[in-house]
Length: 331
Ligand SMILES: Nc1ncnc2c1ncn2[C@@H]1O[C@H](COP(=O)(O)OP(=O)(O)OP(=O)(O)O)[C@@H](O)[C@H]1O
Ligand SMILES: [Mg+2]
Picture: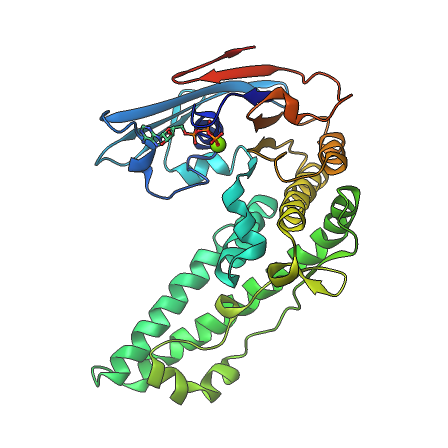
């Protein structure tokens, strides 16, 4: 499905609404207030569609100053997380280039969210680790301030070590499962020799104990999966520093497509693919390759400023929506 319209008319807005309606949150901002029209008190997204041939309807209501309300098939859900554990949408927005060219924090967050989508049983692990880490850091600072004894740190050291080992192994296993498909997908998009790298490192309580003095001095834990990074490279080049803009874009798209492959293969889920402005910056051959690579079973929505973004000879899209300010209609 192609969505076109001039700059600034609301194409990204439409994709964002589909993401909010299917996942409960925006891929662009965590501040829900930004999603409400400037002069309006509230916003509501209602989506209906099919999931594995069964009808689904979702509703997400954002009211300024109130918690958001989410419902699925008419029943209220306890949280927006509950929505994303039921429906999967994968998104490419230009900001997502940060997954390749940004700092390690962005990559960790990206792969940890992917972990939640592909291994729902582990969805809470990154935040459980984050909470244990915050507790340990807090305990370190209390000891440093003389408000607590060293014994108060020990239980958190054990917990950080246990959860850290588990999280690191889960990330390692995720990357190992993903890397072949990622390389294949990147290759098909014209990025040769692409690879992911993450070697799990068990986090021993003894290793944390061994650096306790430094951790106490700094008031933070200086070892663990919260400081690690996933390598994304093509041949010998780390794409973060040495990838061209188009190569970085291709790598992010290959990650999205590889994840979609795994969701289908391992969970039997056909994710909704939301690809914003995905054709710009790619040469004609790569645009052609990308369109050919889009998974057949999934609904894919691609935005562009004009249908001319489709390379010559490409068949007509399954649908074409024309966006003008405040309106989206079949072209
Ligand atoms: N909360 C808001 N209330 C009202 N307008 C907003 C709000 N947030 C963003 N906008 C405006 O909505 C307009 C549409 O933005 P959008 O990013 O969807 O355009 P677009 O069609 O994707 O453009 P481009 O082709 O440049 O990517 C922009 O002018 C933006 O400033
Ligand atoms: Mg846009």
